Length: 356
Image (cartoon, rainbow, N blue to C red):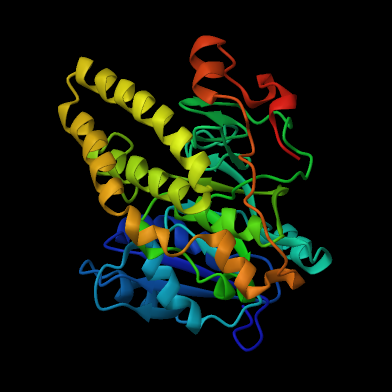
């Protein structure tokens, strides 16, 4: 590591995850790149995480927060301590191979149009298969449902090189998200109203609105354990995903588009809740309805910060003239294509439904 003049700052937020940190942090320290720093961001853990990192890896810089600020605020408050030109937000449950960082750094060095990027995100235990949280780069459909190349709903593809072309994506996963530091700061970082979940899609939406590209770096891959913060079927996770998805759409869509999207979402999310009830998952069904209630109550809080309007005022990326809202990247319904048309893989989706 080169702590004096790092090109890359790797930020790892953690809370009471000592065993996970023991499993994954050593691989990050062994990264083969000539100019990077690691910042371990501790959200007031009580399990000895900080003491272990200090003892095992004295070159890792530590930022200690006074309480559990979760992902959004935890990262935002740690960024002022980072020296890198590029920030890599890395989950604490990610193992990396030695050469993972070089392709990412090279892309930022050679292409000034790129604002954010991600590697391929693979499963920790099945390393030839894409992982749920990001896979090979994300998109959202006309109703705001996220999906990714290599992962649609619960279908996880085997990596057979089908996404090895370095292409633009709509959002990069917060599991391993690389962003230009000045851009992250100018855009205000992660929106803390989300707490955790969907914050990276919201940030990427702002990055694209600002005129920058977001790309997959297929020559880089990392291995994600998943579920370290919240289990996949946790009612709390369902609540945050549904609520934050609605808030993200409210923030980033023009008002008229939001109204039509919300009508469809109210119907589709009600069906999802009924499905949960049918499987006796009462807590998760309640979480969906509570998410809608809270999103409605929080609507005023997100209305004052419409990203397209803010970026117009900033003149971000050298153009302050009437910046428009971005069209949703997939104009079809991923629910329809997956559940009705049985198009289970990204490559099965109609190409004419994607915006360019």
